Amino acid sequence: MSAAAPDGQDAAGRAVPRPRRRGRTTLLIAAAAVLGLLAGTCAGYVVQAGRTPTELPSLSQRSVPQAKGKGPEPLSARQDRRVKTEGDLRELLLKRPKGARDGFEEGTDGWLELAAYADSYEKPGEAFSNLVEAQYRRAAVTSWQVGSTYAVGIRLVQYRQEEYAGAADHVEGARFWAEKEKSTRSWPVPGTGDGQVFVHDRPETEAGYLPIYAAEAHAWRGDVAMEIWIYDTKPIPKGKIMDLAERQMERL
Image 1 (cartoon, rainbow, N blue to C red):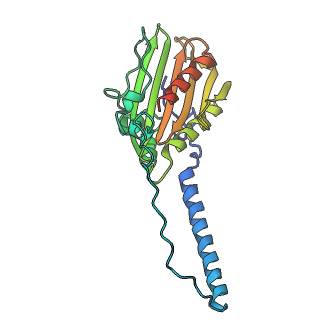
Image 2: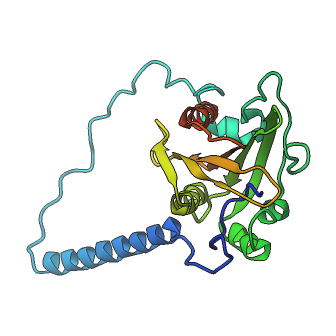
Image 3: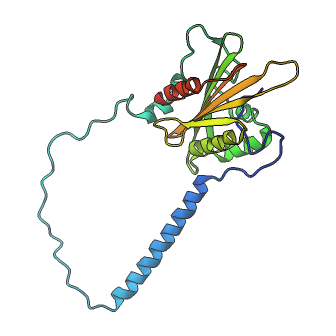
């Protein structure tokens, strides 16, 4: 069973509309605002042209003494999240709990390159193109297993965000598809805006294998999108996925 996020297709592989990119909408709104500003400015010039010139005040002004004292202290590395996310992203991943062992192998040395990340989608070629357009930068990953059936996987996916709000769009798409799963319950992740956790109450079944239950969490902060997946052969409580999501977001 794959832990991949959806890539614009349903479980049967049928093509469906890709989630709307907020970045493009923002550019359109900005362009409209600029056009409105220009139109207002032109109208102002027309009105002023018919008025009698008004005498301007003297340009000489009383000098204002400069404030004494030091300026504001710069943020510490702990307070400035930009410092954290520009460093080793793997350091921000939740640590494996005591007693847990290696989970499903992903990436190399905790990093997941673009091609490997795209390969986790139903249609890797299409996903690769979408990720390039979204300005994928890098992803840090970790996973672990407890007992013989309980498994956790976490990804921190970072975007360049020069043109699009890649992290927010990533989470928007993930939430859209998670909500489409039947027998799914969801709750907001406190302090994350639109972050959510999802518990899928209907297991996936296959002949000869135990049923697999899943839960997932999606949230973002700045240029980093968070994905968490839990799998088990028994129903997964809300508390387990919520605890992981809250603790992971606290580290971003």
